[in-house]
Length: 129
Image (cartoon, rainbow, N blue to C red):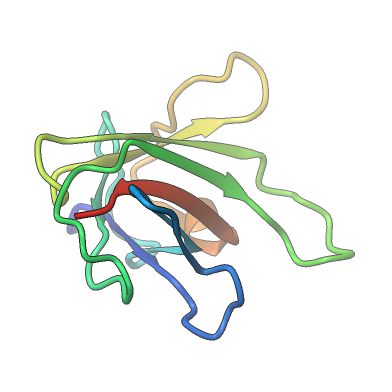
């Protein structure tokens, strides 16, 4: 069983997917977790930000928010919380999965069956270079 990875992508057709200010770039999009049978490693899932169209920075994001967003009218049955921990480079960040019930402990089940089926979205702030 391989270790899981998370790929952050944006929809270039979305009106606010990339938002430029003088010194920063906001990007918004979805998170896809690799195969549901892949292993969750304690400490988090390795995150891939590239290629994100419109993101010209190779610097670590200054802010990332990740959350579960089920389709309108559908119940959120997974109850997972997500946090992003930046790495020393853009390619070394990790996304942790937390259980939303009970103690709020980090996800420890080997296979990512339920988080892999969750609808996960993100927004990130990057320094514009």
